[in-house]
Length: 290
Image (cartoon, rainbow, N blue to C red; front, top):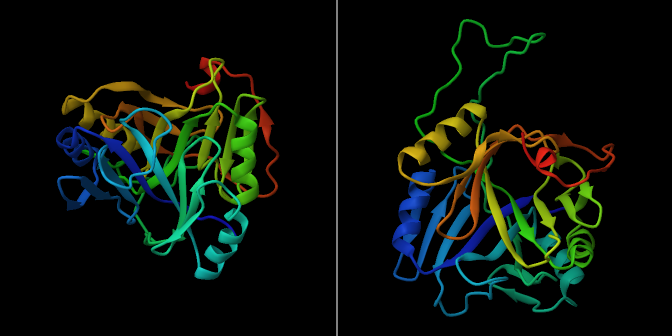
């Protein structure tokens, strides 16, 4: 039994027209629209919702809007969902409603689980020629005019109690520690085998709760560049990038998000198994990014 990944994220914001333009430029498909909410999808059906801050029933935020209000994680079967319900029923804010179960994590974020609605995809991606391995022969690498994100790959949260928040995800949801800044940051993946992290928790020296960024996986490094350049041409602000994370190996580009904090295009993160031994790092700019 393990969580498969992120199925849906919901932001709370007041400027829906700007958010609409932003996420269309970002490469998402608008599938529903009303005065109170915008619903977008990635290529594999992962949903991104921007709800107006005044929407009735919208979960409370960890910080003032615009910010992340809710994360929905996917599981494989109804039986697994029932197992997680048993593990979460003692948590604050426990609910079971409309095919979802959930609670509020120790950081104040609404966490939900459902049987995944994402679609399996088989996509053509670029082959990379290195000095010793050259699989791309008589073929140019792809060039992208813009990005079309595949899914929401991970979220990064600021927390005031990293030990309690990390323990919740590891004990109630079965997440696994990949690497850490001892006492400061935990990189967590949903299961023993998978990408480097689905959730990163960071406790700053001046501890606070909130969103750092939501990350979107794309096909390859060429799409990171194509997407970032398109966003720049459309007038959106780059926060950092393009660059590379030494800890996860991922190539990235961060853009300022009108729905809250930052969003990231990324690709080529490390793939881990149960044989991986978590490492410890001292936080610093050169550890965070090249």
